[in-house]
Image (cartoon, rainbow, N blue to C red; front, side):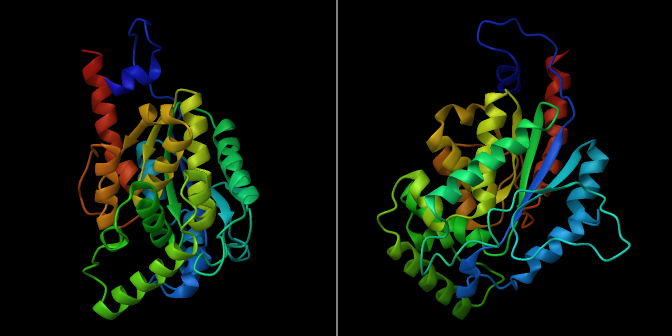
Length: 302
């Protein structure tokens, strides 16, 4: 029924539900907060994963092509230029929307200026504006993106930082404690950033801001938005705060393994389609949930 409401204005007779030219858009960016050791992955992993997706060698691309999705990779702010080895051809279009070479370290200063945050939101809107179709799935790539999402969840939802960060079964206790300490430092430094837009600039990421803009634009065009994972979910939180009507167009694909994502979905009163404890954020969860939307389409037509 949500899909029917998305495609039909109030009072309009229910006609055939259709999905046209579905798009997977993956936003890649680095975070200065990674300098604080809040992620066990080296920062260079952002670049490597983005290049793999660009070359068509990532799980997300394989699932997208299998499901009939076109794929686009957006360089929102990767710390290095994205380049394939000489002689290689990109299998996925690269959209250059780089706001900067990674955000600044939020434990030291604002991650981005208010102008950069606004530019990133506008860039995300522009990306969707030029895409065909009426379905868009959003994913992200970025080391320390989860830490940034944790800070935004805590600030905007009033969740204690320790609960938002949670305990990672794959991380040792020393790392977990240090991560929490550095997150407390960042949160304390920006304690006056209480609005969604201020918190986004102070502690967010370029990819989060762009996904926020992408959701706002997609909703304005009555597109179905498949939200993938914790980082994309945080972008949905900000987008909803800026434009409340956006939430009607958001389909939360899955509940990820991060404890913060579970708390975020509770706050949003969102029921995800899948709960598989996935840790991938490149759109894999959104693509795995896609057959459920297709099933709903068939049920509405019989």
